[in-house]
Image 1: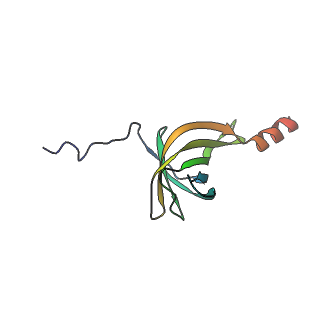
Image 2: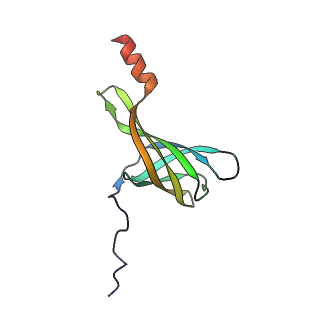
Length: 116
């Protein structure tokens, strides 16, 4: 009996969601890399996304995803995350998320408050 084959190793269930993401990678040696892509799936503990370049495995990554819902049906939300690149190949990147926070877009939120 092969126990390892059809077992899910992830701690949290991943949800298939596709929305824009921006990232900044800080390699151990070298200059920071910035870019964008599209999420494939996401959970509180990890995510995968598509981008044009391979990212250095083990590097710290900061990400901002444009959340598909708005606060109060007006103010755009961003999902801000940090973590580490665990896999990167052929335009697909997997990240172990270490922190995440859903935030209102500050510039838009201020313009709504000013007009109220």
